[in-house]
Length: 174
Length: 250
Ligand code: SF4
Image (cartoon, rainbow over all chains, first blue to last red; front, side, top):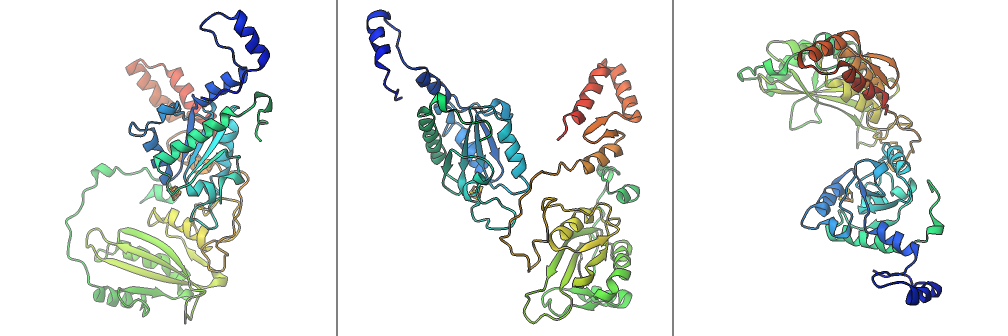
């Protein structure tokens, strides 16, 4: 865990004033720490990558080691949208609506070749990458990505969240 | 197969009471070929060198197709009671092809005799229309919609001939050889497909008051009432729950 350096004034006060067992830090660091270690994923599994996501959640790979095991099936209770599978144009408005229903702050992982680029479905019905429809934070390569790659993607996202600034919250629906 | 098939709704007839008949010896390909030639005047398709395919010419299809299929299904010696598949072919870029551009292929199987039959119906490009056989085989309902969606062959008499795989804003028929296969078409608003849901609900006694909202019709309400009296279930609660199904919308 890497906290941003505490502003000098706070540190000076804490040295003389704050009793033992109390640490001084910034609100931003605490909030980001909480957010990135308790991600609640909403799995949008539409194809084979969805099966791989089940492997990630199972005890062998165990996504709960990273605090993201509380899989929700309502977008209103989730803050991490994991798209694992092929997205067709017929499905695109549904995906967009689910994204819109999630509360801020929210993040999106595009898992696998299909969600990221359309994969080998270079045809009339498949969306060539879900970033045509919704913003994406992390892309995971693979067809399907191995569970380790999923976890790597999750850790990358956690690092990204740690660097976020509260003042620069994403605009709603951006 | 009787009344419900006409409405395009499944749910009639109890599957559990259906008993399989013992398998009887069926007809050979040669016998089927002779029979089809004699009864319907069909010709064997020379392009199919491995199996038996009988061809129905484009000019005769509209008048004869429905009757031919009905006889195939009902004749006691044939009894093709299963429509395995229904697919279309576009011969646009087929080497050395002469004749109509499209063909619709029907694959039949008999569960009693275990013989199979392939019927190829030629379809002209500027008159791409065939009679629907959804009243003979319920599965043809969706298969015909698929052929219409992907190839643009119209099935006259179909109760609900709309796209089934592609979205409702799609223009063109993507499996035609002259459709550029990478041409993508975006969808702005998805189709909730409540029309089919509503027809099913109506079939089970619900009454559709407003699109997306479902209320209990008289027969079902009466049924719930009696259940409530027997098992002391709160009827109002049940009504509310049933209302919520519809009120949620899609
Ligand atoms: S990327 Fe590969 S494994 Fe994942 S959904 Fe597409 S085809 Fe399936």
